[in-house]
Image 1 (cartoon, rainbow, N blue to C red):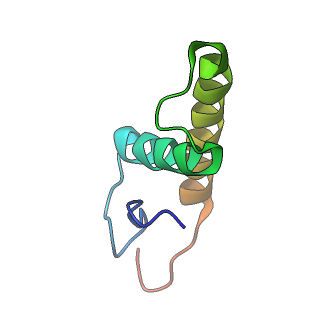
Image 2 (image 1 turned 90 degrees about the vertical axis):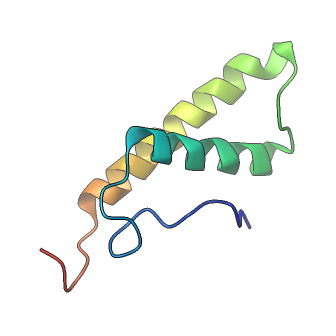
Length: 70
């Protein structure tokens, strides 16, 4: 779906940053919404979606157990 979103877990990425998770969230919301940049009347909903997806992504990464890593 979103080919430009990179894998953010080991061994692909050792220590993803907040910027990495936010960039992935932004790409996802852009793809799902169909807007690269939303109109002013949709900006709040767009920004909130990016925040929520970013938080969910970070939660997922924090909770994943990847076998073969420390």
